[in-house]
Length: 497
Image (cartoon, rainbow, N blue to C red; front, side, top):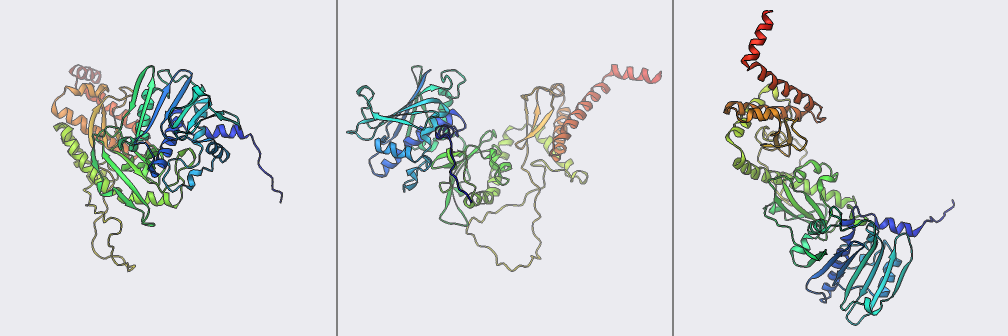
C-alpha cells in the first residue's frame, strides 16, 4: 500500500476556514469572543480589568475593533499562527469560548486584509501583524510610534471590505449588530462582565442586555444532571412568551451555538413545546463540544443524553405552559370565541369525529403529570405486567386559543392553525360579511373555522386544507345566495319554466 501526503493551497484553505461563519455578523462577533477569552484568563490570575470593553468603529472602507483585554506578544502570535485548528486554549483549565484558534481568520467573511495592533502589558511594545486573504503568509513587526497603543489590549483593522457596511440594509449595520451582540452575549452583558459599543457616523450605539419582561417558568429544572453521568449538568433558563414569537438557544460558555432549537433536528424536540414559540430560553451545556466556527455541537453520547434529559422534563414544562396559556386566553377571548370553542369541542368529541387528530384543547382531559425528578424512587422491577387499572394515555395537543388577525398573504385564506391558535383571517371577504352580523352568526362562523382546522389538522400533507377552503367558500356563497329574496324569486321563476 502506498501512502501519500495530501497537498493543497494552504492560503485558500485558511480563507475558507474563516468563511465557515454563516454571516458577516457571526464572523465579526468572534473578536468579542477572543477578547472575553483573554479577559477570563486574566481574571483567573486576578489581573483582569473589572469589565471587558469592546468598541466597534464602522466606516465605509474599514471596520476597527478595539478591546482592553491583554493582547498577544510576538511569540504568542507566531505560536497561534503556526498551529491553526490546534489551539493552545485546549490546554487551559479555565473555560474558554473558543477552542480551535480559527477565530483570528474570521475577517475573511468581511474583508481581504486584517491588521492587528497588539500590546500585552503596560511596558510591552505594540506588535503589528498583517493577514491577507488567500495567503499562507503573515507580516509581523513592531508597530511604529503613531500606530502604538497606549494601554494593553488589541486594535484590529479589517480593510478591503467585501461590502459597504454603511448601507442601511447592510448585515453589519449598527442596529443589526446591536441586536445580534445583545442576543449572543446576553449572559456576559447581564452580569456586567462585558461592555460593547458601536460607533457609526459620529453616533454611539451601546449594546444593552435584552429586556426580559416575561414570566419565569421551569424553575424546578434550573439545573439538570445527566442520568448517565451525574457530574455533567446543564442549566435551563425559561420564560413564558404569550405571543409565541420566541425561541430557545443552546449555549456553550455563555454564547449561543444553536440559535434556535426549532431549526435543529433533535430527535423530535424540534416539534415539541421547546420550539412552539411560547418559551424564550437558554440551555447552557458547557460539557458539550462545539463544532468548528461553533455552527453546532458534536453529536456524541453527551449530546444524545442531553436531548433525552430535555425530553424527560418536557411534560412538566408543557403543563406549566398550558396553565399560563389558559389564563392568558381567558383574558383575551370574547364570549363568542369561548362559546365557539366549547361548541366545537362538544361536536368533535362525538363518535363520528373520534378518528380526527384533535386540535390542542379539543382532546380529552389530560391526566395529571407528575415528574419525579432525576434520582426519584422507582418501583421494583419484576418483569410482570401490572394488573391494576391505569390511566389511559391522553390524546396529544394543548388547549387551543382563537384569534382574528390579518394574514400576510392577503384575503384568500379563511383560517389556519398555528402554535395552538386557530387564526381567522380578518381580511377575508366572508369574515368581513359576518363581522357585523348577529351573535349567533358570529358564533357559527367561529365554530366553522375551528371545525375546518380540526379536519385539516388530521391530514399532515396539508392538501386537504386547499379543498376545505374551497368548500368553505362554497358554503358562504350558497348561504348568501339562498338568503337573498331577490335570488329566491329568480330561482323560483327558473323552476317554474
